[in-house]
Image (tube, rainbow, N blue to C red; front, side, top):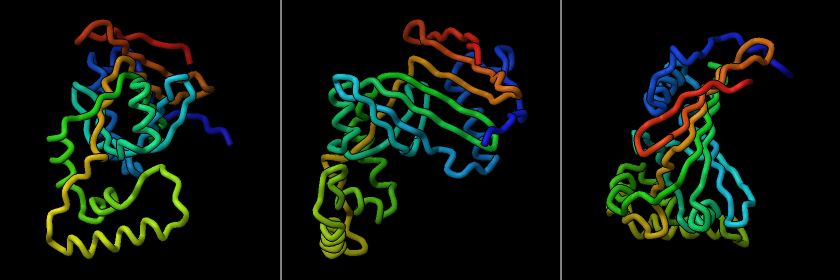
Amino acid sequence: MRLDYSAASLSEDTTKGDPIKQFEKWFNEAVEAQEHEPNAMTLATATYDGRPSARVVLLKGFDPSGFVFYTNYLSRKGKEITKNPLGALTFFWGSLERQVRIEGTIEKLSKEDSEKYFKLRPRNSQLGAVASPQSQEIPSRDVVEKKWEELVEEYGDDKEIPKPSFWGGYVLKPRYVEFWQGRSSRLHDRIVYKKIDNKNWKKVRLAP
């Protein structure tokens, strides 16, 4: 099941000085390549005693401050972030033979930013966020379907749905970003950015 990667190469000279700008370049190329959900990323969190867990979520924005996603604060990941704010993200764009790994600290977005995004979501996504007690044990699917029906009746087709207090955004503020480009014979290219102070990055190459 192994593949020999040969789509491209990666060097210190061809990568940008800022990892966010390099990520933007690669992300745009993934979109242009029509990768399936190029904003899908594995989010890894851990409890206070170090037990890890991971799941795929969707990137909803990024800028120099970090990488944004939204979820239920009372979900497993939300609870783990509260106990241990250290987290990691992984992107894999198979057609381009590329991977990006990001490590940093996760913080909540402001209530205003979360409300602003919530209003932009499709109406059914808003209802789903309210209806689901995410990650909690439930006796059957009927629980969420009944809640959904109650909400549809309550809000109709045009009544504004307020953002629930238990739902909102997070930003992962990176301290480490690795760009991986698959190469032939498993001699992959790995360029890493390490944050050395509040705004400057050190760029190094790792052995494959």
